[in-house]
Length: 110
Length: 117
Image (cartoon, rainbow over all chains, first blue to last red; front, side, top):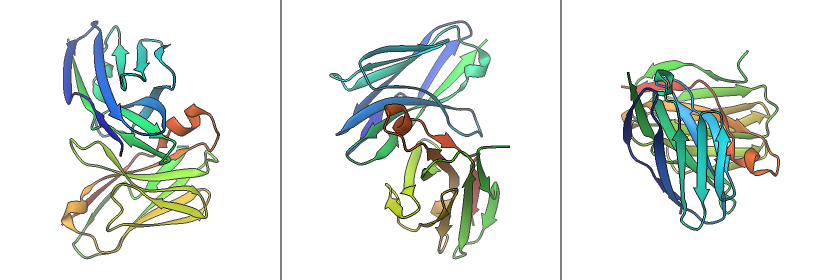
């Protein structure tokens, strides 16, 4: 089956850098993606990696190592508005499903 | 106007009642999904549909049914609601292209908060 593991909570201070790790198990891997969800809101897509390496989008970067079944989301220059839950998700071409991790709650402190 | 809408936004009902949650989208996407979110459990897939005639069970379909009335509409029904179906329900859509981004990028509605007493 498909499964993902990510830390449940992370705390950092404004202006700092934080890394949220995700390990996964799946067959027919077709991409690792990241979603952000503010409290009470809908998840919104941040990025996805299909190939090994780092993808940068502004203050956010996402990394993938397919050989290690591992990825991370890197948030730089943290702002208070980055306080949210972050979900990694893996798509399997075998099942046609996008399966989400349990989410990491990021708290940014002043 | 929002691309993916859900009605109702909030609903309180009693055990044993039949409930329908509706989802509409204007994105022109073929693929639609229903998820359930419980605290600490992330998003779990209930049902998904790749087109009007294609409906598939997700991880937790027991106690739920769906109807894809048109490309733009996908409804979720709880035939006889029970308290452990109290949760936040999200509808989502995605493009049917063959690129990785099509499979991985989903667009979510605002959610329906359902409480079963």
